[in-house]
Structures are given as structure tokens and as C-alpha cells.
Image (cartoon, rainbow, N blue to C red):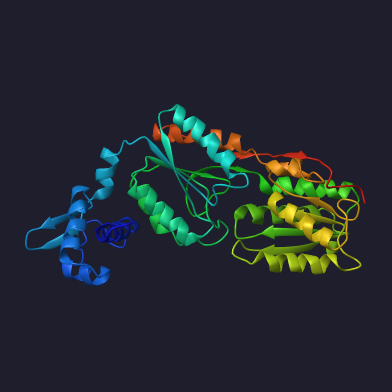
Length: 357
């Protein structure tokens, strides 16, 4: 359990890292901190004392407490052989493969990894970033959180850059930040999936896409681009958009209503394989068969996709290769070597969830 002084220390340190108090700023008094945290003067002094030892705070006799130049101090002192890894999820879907690939490379180079996940929530991303700074990681590999939306954590990212910490993005990147990245060509890959469904004589296709991540937006745009090449049937397309914070039961209800119509789509393109597996259950609940009545495609080639019945047609996310490439890139960045961004062209994997109409 966290002690009171640790809570105070963490709170003050987080505000300094986040830029609430800038280098050279005068900090609130001990009495102010006592009121803010509801603790004794001894507790505040213990917390401040440790922050002084860590070069986050300095005192001027009779003048108060001030924010030390912790970023410059950090650049010259940090060498703890640790890489921070922040993803939207950790233990499920494709993420263990990515993290395993990263760990293989960084451990071979004498580094360990500190892992945190954001659950695709900006506030949790902020907490993860501060935790990484607090842990003095030498570099970070980050999967952006809700990358299609404005990011409220740009101030933290600015502090990370000022502290000289290399950052590499995976799966997506922030347009407002000039970080190298490794990701897939989601737009063109989704376009190829829809073109494949067209060759199977499917004209009425429903697209279901998560749109608070840039991956989902690009995949949805690929869906649209495919239809733009076939203007005579573009009016037959349908799209359901959702965000990661939405209640999925409502999304499945909407899909169910669409698929209950007599003129329902004959194919469904899903944001990813995880969603596609759930959508197949929705289809079966309507006494429709996959692929005899409805074809379904996913994205990412999730490990289970090959073994479900029917096996899922999808696009292959590089997963462990992405992790390995990210690990190699971040080691180069730590060593002050230049790194170019990488975009993979996924391979289409045709299985049994699709059939000619």
C-alpha cells in the first residue's frame, strides 16, 4: 500500500513532469501542500526531501522551493538499461506477440522492458507516460491511444522530447508529433479486401469500423475507396462506426437490425478479427450461415482466426515482426542512430468465411 509521503511525492513529481510547474518556478509552500494533500508537515518535508535528492526540487534559504532543471540532469545521468513499452492492451489479441518481439531484441542488447497499457484511454495514457518518466526509462515504444482524436497529452510528449527520450510509435502515429513509426498500410489493405469481395460478386457490403483509432479510420477509408472505383454500386454500401468507449451490445444490435432486413448485405467487413468473430455469432443468432448466406472478413490474422469455424478471411498483421523491428529501431535510437519510419503491406489470407455469392 502506498504511504502518505509517497502519495505526496508522486503528486508533486507528476505535476513537475507534466509541466504544471516549469523549471525555475516557485512551488507552493509546505503549508499549501499540507492542505492540498491533507497531510502533516513532516510528510510533506519527507516527500520534498526525496525530490530534492532526485534533483526535481531545490530550496533557497528563506526564499522557498523551486523546480530544478530535472530534464538536463536526467539526460546526463540516466543509464538504467530500461525501455518503456506502452500499448492500448497487453494480455490479449495481437499484443503479446508484438511485446514478445520487442522483448527478444531489447533483452539481447542488455535492456529490460517496463510495460504499461492504456485501455485506449487518454487519461490512462497520461498516467502511463508519467510512470515511464518517473521510472527513468531510456526510450519508449508507444502504441498511440485514440490516435484519430485530438490528444490532450501533447504537453507530456513535449516534456519527453525535451528530456531527450527517444520515442518510436507502433500500429499508428500522432500527426501532431514528429516521431518515427512502424505500422501497416491499413487503407490499401482494406481496399484489397473489399475488392476481393467484389470479385466474389458481393455488391452489398456492410463495413463495421472503430473510428477513434487511425487504424480504423484508414480501414474505413479503404472500404470507401474500393466503392469509389465502382460508382455504379457505391450506393449499396453501408457503414457502422463506433468508438472504443461505446457499449458493444448496442453496436451488435445495430448490425443485427441491418442483417434482419430482407435486403441485408451479403458480406461484412470488420475492423479486426476480434470483432469479426463476435459478428459471426450475431449472424448465427439470426439463423444466417457463414459463408453460405453472409461472407465475413476481418483484419490482423489473430491467432484464433485460423481455428474458428469457419476459419476467417483476413489481412495478416506482422505482429512479432513488428515487435522485432521496433526493438531494433529503438536500440538504434538509443545509440543516436537515425531511424526511418516503416509501413508494411499486409498479405491477404483467404480462408472459409468468404464464398462467392
